[in-house]
Image 1 (cartoon, protein in one colour):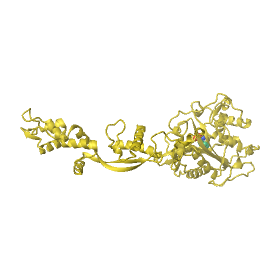
Image 2: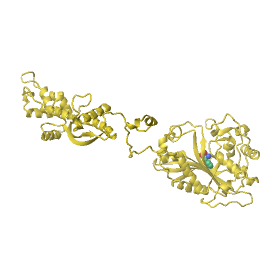
Image 3: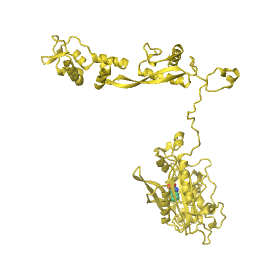
Image 4: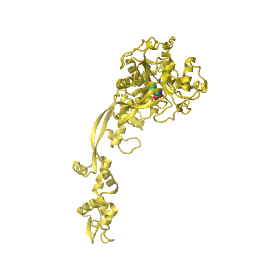
Length: 531
Ligand code: PHE
């Protein structure tokens, strides 16, 4: 259709030199000239396409025309109210007069009421014997005629006064329209073949370039958006949190071992071998290889002994120790598995061994809530502040807020004589730096910490307290077998990464943040994180 209209315009220009009024064009497949608003819109599309190729130029003229309202359209179709009343009542002397009630039933109360008034005024009907009968033998429904005229021509020959009257009666409304006059452009031709967009080798060798028409460069075009790399929201939040730790003098722990032994994930943390968290519905175990290397023999023996018989002030679990259970390989369920292995390394000098990782070289010891008491004491201990942000895995049923893998943010602080007040003070500083000032603590239970605290933050949008973390003072029966002196205390805590990110970005389903359903566009457009 558009091609045919374009051709019509070009042919008309070729024949007449110009088009004075596009309302005179007779569009393909039509018998009448294109006087209507809709027809001019279609013509405008064709004009724009031709003028972009500089084949034509055109000028726009605004007009004001009229269209029928819903009521006007129904009159054009079924007649005016008064004509419908006249048609409904019987001719005098033929049949019984129609009562006003019957009329209302036949036409509806609105048409019956308005129509009756006008029909009386026009002397089309009279009252007779408590009912209505025709007075005029025939009528001329001028309103319907007017409606039909406006509908087909957009105006009335009768002129503006008649139009104003119909507008007042809300039967017609004004509508802006446009029409155009059209001239030949610099690249006028009667052929609508699309202009070339590129100069090709073929055109050069064949010489076709001499006669081809080329599309003009559009220097106003916005161009294709550049595709720079962006950080996923989770990585942005992770980077922010990492910066908070670094600013507080923490060093990052290596956490690349997604696969751990049950020994580091559970046993070293004094989690009993019969603990429900160890069961297959909560933990993913490896089938191949299924058995870990043997942990450091001395330490292993001490851990086994604490579990089975107690020690370091603890009664132990008084349950048989299983080597097999301790050697099972699994996907770590918390990053505390890595923290524990790191603490054991940290205690190397206290055991009189060489350190194989210089944990202390990483740690800056500045900006904490308390001054580190530090080394000294002749036992080789040096304080440390360590953190990690990495993946953990749990055999969860996945839903809108749970995945089988997620991230934990974790930190441990080791120093002499640390107290619970240090932990609480640290938490307040840490969360304030994350933009969360309103926090509360609730006593909790972890097999490896005593006391343990859950951390709750007030969520202003949800208007309630939500759990944001878990923390505690590591137990002596966990620390002393590693070789730490009695006065060295370690506090630690873990918080999620996904939940604060979801809150920050207003994401209600975790699967739109992580996994194959993440839209790259939403990642590209997500705002920079602000803590
Ligand atoms: N491992 C705990 C968790 O997964 C967090 C924690 C870390 C608690 C360190 C206390 C000390 O929730």
